[in-house]
Image (cartoon, rainbow over all chains, first blue to last red):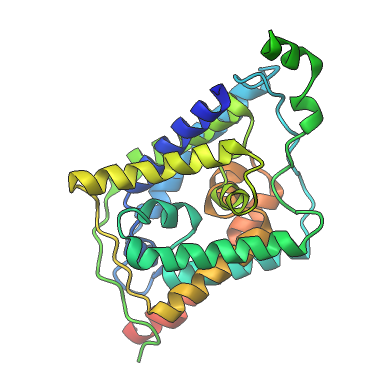
Length: 160
Length: 146
């Protein structure tokens, strides 16, 4: 329950941030990417605002034995720059720059303007699903360490 | 002649951008400190399609959808100007899905979470997608203006 609540609150903050910064508007994203005409540098400041707080979060977590919900921090992939990573990033960059939507802003814009954003979201989910379908070992964010999550101590606490 | 039309001009909104960025950074920090998860939307969204093995992804997505929904109900939602054709919207969405799936992250997972912890993978991914995005927009919507 605690895990779901924290995830929900985090999603709300994340969505509110994208909406307030107007990143849910693909015109703003395309204008950031267009250095030749009507350049709008807003997106750079969104990232500049987000990075220090996120970095602080990761730094604070280093001194914590566990996350607030009692789970262990998973180990995240470091290094390992594969052709798959670069190729994927390039393909993503092409799609992003043709439309002006990436996954977060598209989901935030979905309830604001379901038509036509839903078409983008459905196509995006299809793409994500196909990658999952054809890859046996996802190059993804570190898979949750299920063993760590189900350690006897926390399970015992929960069953009490 | 331009391949794609220019979107409407948008004003530089530094204050809103920084405030929004702070919220996004706080959300990412909270998700890691709170439940030990990376706030990468492509990864979270890819977990929605399969049977929901990880309910937290569903909870995060519900939270992500809420602000836009509330803003719309209250009539204060900022405009979403989609200028791309239907075909391009589908094609672009598909490329975004395939690409972020292969790369294991998108603007949030690599661009914010990964960059903030100086992950070499994320730095490479972010500079790759940003670099090509500037080139593509210049070729499709920039050349005609010069």
